[in-house]
Amino acid sequence: MKKSILAALAASSLAVFTGQAMAAEDVTLQLKWVTQAQFAGYYVALEKGFYDAEDLNVTIKPGGPDIAPEQVIAGGGADVIVTWMAAALAARERGVPLVNIAQPFKNSGLLLTCLKESGIESPEDFPGHTLGVWFYGNEYPFYAWMAKLDLPTDGSEEGVEVLKQAFNVDPLLQKQADCISTMTYNEYGQVLDAGITPDQLTVFNYRDEGVGMLEDGLYVMEENLEDPAFVDKMAKFVRASMKGWKYAEEHPDEAAEIVIEYDDTGAQTLEHQEYMMGEVAKLTTGSTGALDVDDYNETVQTLLSAVSPDNPAITEEPEGAYTLEVTDKAFAN
Image (cartoon, rainbow, N blue to C red):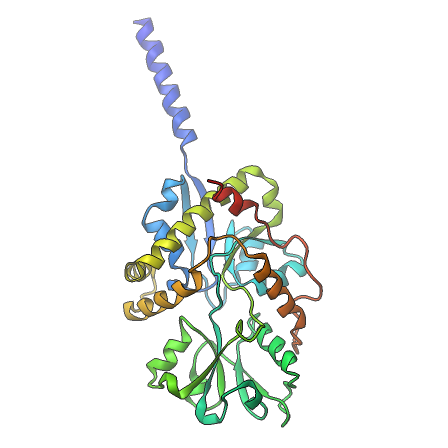
C-alpha cells in the first residue's frame, strides 16, 4: 500500500516536472503593417505548427498606419518586430537600441514608378517633374538617390518637385505626380489593376540604382540579447519562421489562403494576396535568414548619404546594430 502511494506521488511529481519542462515559451511578434502576404512566412509557421514544433507560443500582432513597431517594442509590447532597417537604425540612434537578429527579405521591393507619357525614361529626365515619395522613414532611399544624381528637391526647374505621397497610387492615376513610390508586391499591382499596362510605365528599382536598403528584418532590444535563454528562444523563433517562409515560397497559393484566414478585418482579397505572395517570394528567395553584411553596409551608406529636409535617418555609422549569433545558433546543424 505504502509502496503504491509513493509510486503514485513519484509519477505525479514527474508529470508536473515534465509539464513545466515542456511548457511553450511565449513570443510576441509585432508586424510593420496590416495582415497581408508581406508577412506570410510568420502566418504559415503559425498555421503549419512550425512554432509549436519548437515549443513556442507565438502571438502575431498586425500593424497599421498608427502603429510604429519601434515604439511598441520599446514599450514592452513585443519581443521581436518586423521593420525596415532605416527605421531600426534611426530608432537606435535616437535611443531605442534595436538589433537586427535575422533578415528574411534578401531583396528590395521599393520602386519609383513613372508614366512614360510624362517623358521619363531615365533618371536624366527627372528635372522639372513631380515625384511622389513616401515619408515616415521611407523617404531616405529617394533623397540618397537625388543626392547621388546631384538633383535639387526644392521644386526648381533644374530639380524635382517632391509630393508627400499617401500609401496609395492616386497621385499617378489623377496625374498629380509623374512618378510615385510603389512596392513590387502591392502598389505596383494596383497601378496595373487600374488599367495601366507595363509598357506604359518606366520603373526604377532603388537597389538597382545603388541606393537600396534592406526592408523587412527581425529586430529585438539589445539588452535582451544578454540573456542566453532569450537568444535560444529567438533562434528557435527564427528557425521556425524561415521554415514558414520557405514553405510559403514553394506553396504561394496556399500561403495566400492562410493569410486570408488570419485577416480579421476582411479587407484583403484572395486574388490580391496571391499576387502579393508571388512577388514577396522573389524578395525572400535566396535568404537563409542570416543578414548579409554587405547588404547591411549598403543600407548604412544609403542612409548616410540621404540629404532629407526633415530629420536624417542616421548621422554616423552605427555600432552593434546587428548580430549573427541568433542565426548561427538557429542553423548550426
